[in-house]
Length: 531
Image: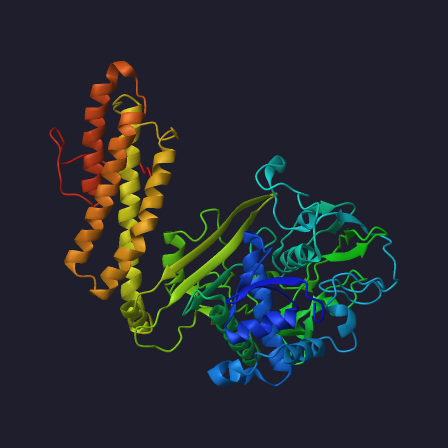
């Protein structure tokens, strides 16, 4: 990777084959747009890897301050300089530690620890294609197919290795007592490692600088606090040390920015030149972390829950408006270094970038990515800690309205589907698809209205605009649903009339609407929770 052009990079002047140092040169120069051959679910793992190794290389070369000055940063746009910095991270083994396939198994290969006895005894074939060692889990081999990369190149093995070793979780027990453990930087084996950061631009080169800055800031904080036990001269690249014994590495011996590996794996080339991955489970994880840490290891891109002091675990809903508004609330989440707001710039953009591959027990629950543009005036508010409570109050009220709208739609549709029954059966799941559609529509407009309310100090016109938009979306879906769903045919007209009354009453009760329909009671009894 230091001398061979394994990578394929897209730049402002075309597509080029490149070494890793040449890619870093282009990132510093601001001309790299992206990497070809990188699957969507591999992107944030690869970006986190680049942020970490670049920051580590600058720390060890004494050039960390270069990220603070644009001129100094541009001076780093030199491939030979990056080759030397990366080689210096692997003293005594630079000739193999950045290579994908190394015949001498006693030497480290890229993201592959050395095997002290020099043989694959105890190892079995883990994959004949890069996709087989990747993190995707698909039920019954549907959706994205396993083992689909029959004509794989070293590039594909590179990206799959990075994804496997830096964001993979627990993958099951192998008798008698060995496991495929996951990474340390997440709250539990079935959690996920996210990337959450503020960036002034969506351009990859600008995000790279922002990511390196966040990594260095997180490293300084981790070394200056008693919450962690890292060492300034600790082991940084965990694949440099052999993994032969059933013994974990301790945080006390690691650099805060350590690039971890979670699996024993080696890539081997057969006589025909084809690469095969060999793997071996282990009784213990590569890094020993106290259970009470809950994934809170000072990662620069992982928000920490303020109440439970645990690393963010994203659910199957991904970065929906409910989670994102909590991430913006310092009372809910402690912001990592990547979410520290940069200095204010006139008319400067600020984006929230959030990405994660959500893992579940024996399954993958979706690749989620969100870009959210933060308006200039809202940025000013967010920099003022005294305003945080006001933003939290506004977003909390809007969430309550959203819940009320969903409850109203559910009550109305259940009344309709059940023929206008006096007592609703809330176990009926037929309205679920329509509730999901409403949730997506709310998601699409939530932050536009939240930011408008923040900018206007929560005045009445912006509040009414939000309620009106929410009411319109909910009524439109109710009208559409009642033309497509099928109640008992002989009671359709009655069901629609009763459902309309119940629906309108629920909207009014939630504070979303002031409209009434004929026959609506002013003192409607409490409904069961239908959210």
